[in-house]
Length: 285
Image (tube, rainbow, N blue to C red; front, side, top):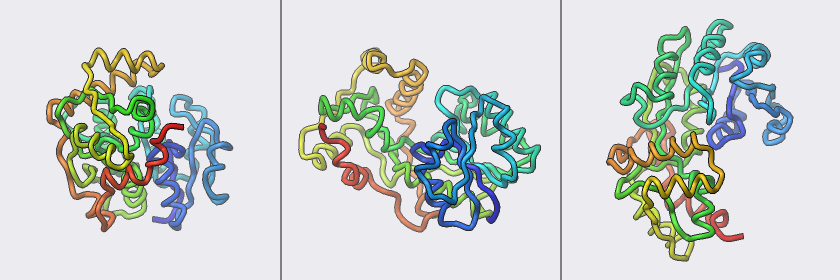
């Protein structure tokens, strides 16, 4: 499509890829951030940048002005109501399409915030695309990096369960495609990597790629919560991770799909390829 595409979370793991891919398209890209000048520095001069917070309705007018489509995500710690109200505001000013970053299995859990937002979008006066993405490989570079680098361990309470771990860059490319190709409207996609991987196997691959022994600790939920809290992780995020790893431990997150290949025309990145790309990032400083 031509027009103006708004990208929320533009400096984040997925949003940054969405922007970079869209920069090569004919659409005008607008990034929304609490610190717009800092955010704009990460992208080309052609990208528009506006001050925005989904919890501050006074910022919505300039953010939505002239926008045709939106990449929307649920910011950590944000409730459902502000997102729903923002969607309604977008529909009122003529936004045509919203691509929403959801999570794997959202359709099976009615009380999940992501599913509640999906239902609202489906009933709103906009077209939608739901991207139900699996566990991001980037979590190994972010929330779990300290244990990998400092203790040579993967510290998650996932038992023997497996996940269709996906590179968030693949998710961002799918999102950008959905925003510019109309055949993806009013569709819900399950996005995973090419294989379902247990954390035992993840530790073996990490050991091979990093050339040092990395073990899978498999702590109890209580041990995990205590470690994360001691590191200063917000209780809400700890609770979300516990829920995610509980789903994995129960075997409910092991599915894979061929959606990435079907949309992008190539295989999604493997776990090994991701770790090879980020080997330096997982070495001790």
